[in-house]
Length: 386
Image: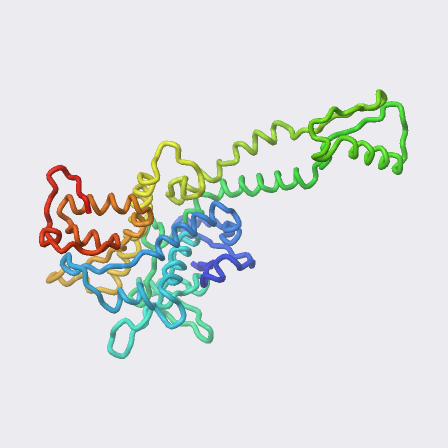
């Protein structure tokens, strides 16, 4: 199975014009293909990919060892410097973007002489071929001057969606028909406004047969007397032999334009995004509630997909003497709105999760020189003044 990718790096992600396609294969030997580069030309697809990828790229990974936050070299690779060619934000961005567009993303695990993970290299999907060898899964990677075979333990294989643990699907797989409708709709509207008459009206000369020069003279004279801001609101005077009719856009076109939000809703559903993340209006949900839905239903499952693969490939999860768990810290999503941020920290103080001084530091205030401000003390009325 050959997987051809779109995003080799951030610069190429949204500037490549060369057509590329992705193919999905399953046990019934059924192939479905479409152009994922062309999908980025759809503004809703572009926005969905960017919103999700940037959210993933912005979040930091935290390692919990027996429920206590700690740090190590692997976490540092994802949060600071995965390799010598890509920063942490771009690294996580291209992983997420490839998962959304291609259904999967590949990262080569580079080991140093001591057997430790030295760096992580993102692999363009077009360079990876997955095959089986003696019941083992082998990743054949085409580099500049050679082709190497990697085992499962030597590569991180991030999957957006899989039904058998091997074949992967992106949200675009469910939007093939919707994108086809969108493309045909765009072409229809473009052709209509491009080819339709641009005249604002028709002036009929009922009893005259005019040549081209005379038509231009009559048109210029009529426009001089009746068009422009200086003539706005004035009464138009027309010769009895003339008849003026103002042109209107057909009501079918207006109805079509008014219902043009169909694709946006379908894309939001496929990418599991609240409609307001694509610029739509969510009439029945507040911004805070929408943010909670985005985190709970969209980001946390995405985060879990990434951390599960990292834990499985880069940590000894068979060691029963301690528990390792990786989590993405998405607190920044709640800290973007200051009033919501204050409310959230007040809730944490009231429920004995953090102290008042800890909350003040998070909010940028000076610590209070009071021992009780460092205690986890529940407020009787659940209302805390920080």
